[in-house]
Length: 362
Ligand code: PEP
Ligand code: MN
Image (cartoon, rainbow, N blue to C red):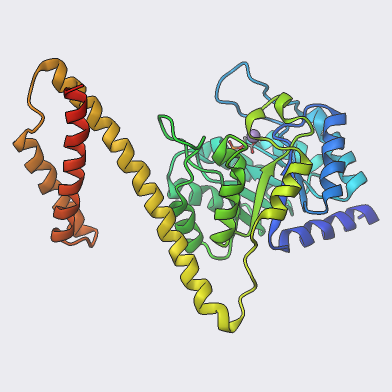
C-alpha cells in the first residue's frame, strides 16, 4: 500500500465514525473544474467529511443528463488528492462497482431506484465480494422496508462489513410539499430494527427544493440521525441535474451553522432528551396524519363533484355503515378502541360531508 492509500483509508474510517457525519457534493459530476472547485470550496467550510458526486445517473425520464460516466472518476481522485476528503459515488451495476474500485473511490452508495430491484442489487453485491469498502444503501423509492432490508442483506452477504442507511424519502403520486415524502416513521422503524447501522438523512432528495432543506435537516438531527447528505453545487441554478434542490458550498455551511445540534446525553438530561425525542416523533406523525386527512378530503371533494354531476344525495347510509364496520374491525386489530374509532370516523365523516356540501352548492 502506498502512503497516500493508507492515509485515505484512515481518513475514510475517521469520517465514517464521526458524528454527525456530513456528506456533500454535487448531484452529478459535470466537468473537472466543477468537481474540483466544489471540493475545494466545501473543504474550505471545514464542515464536510465526505465528497459525493453522481457519475452514473439513473434518471426517471430519458433525455435528462445521465451522468458523465467513468471519465469523471479521475476528477474525484484529483479532488481527493487536493482536499483529503474521501469520495463517494452511486453504483447501480457490477461494472460500475469495478470502475469505482479501480479508481479508488472510498465509499459507495446504492441509489433508491436500484434498491427496489433485487437483480440489480445482487449484481452490485457480487461485484463487491472481497472488497473492503463502506457501502450506504438508500431507501427504495416505494415505502417498503422489506426491500430496503433485502438490499442491505445482499450487500452484507457479499462480505461488506461497514454498512449504513440513507433515508431519502418515498415517492408518492400527486403533489405534496415534498419531492419524496419523508414518512419519518418508516425510517425510524428501520433504525429500530437495525440499531447497528448508521442512518443518514438526505434532505435534498426529500425536499426537491432549497427552501425547506434546513427544516428537514433539523428534523433529522432532532430524530438522532447519524448524519446528513446534502447536495451542493458551485452554480446551483445551472446544475445539469437536480438544480432546484442544490445549494452553494457557502450556503451549506450557513445551514449547518444554524442547525441546533443535539446535546451530548448527560445523566441528568437523559429523561428530558428522551421525552423530547418522543414528542418530536408524535409531532411528525401528527403532521403526516394531517397531510393524509387533507388528501382524503380532496378525494371527498371529487366524489362530491361526481355526485353533483349525477344529481344524487351526499349521504348514502349503506356506504357509511360499511366504512364504519370496516374501520372498527381493522382498528381493533391495531389496538384502537371501538369507541375511539367511532368518534374519530364521525369527525372525519362530518368534515367530509362539509367539503362535499361546499362543492355541491357552489
Ligand atoms: C442522488 O443521490 O443524486 C440520487 C440519484 O438519489 P436517489 O437515489 O435518492 O434518487
Ligand atoms: Mn440528485
